[in-house]
Amino acid sequence: MENFIISERVKQNHYVRNYAKMYFWRNTYQQEIDLIEESDGQFSTYEIKWNENKKVIFPKQFQETYPVKETKIITPKNYLEFLS
Image (cartoon, rainbow, N blue to C red; front, top):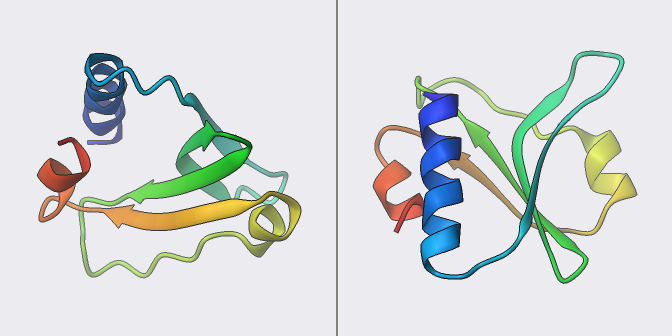
């Protein structure tokens, strides 16, 4: 699901001419963020989960180090909204 969501997000950003830089992040403790979009020096972070009931914690290390504008969890229920 992650690959599908990310590839569709890349296409959507291209279509609407949103040229945000896209990354993923993982530290040495194996904490990760599935998708990061950087735009105007601010970061929007996204976790992609098939199971919407799974607890998601965005790593504090990242949030304390970088200017995070938005955090969002993408699930099968809201992925279409995310891709439009």
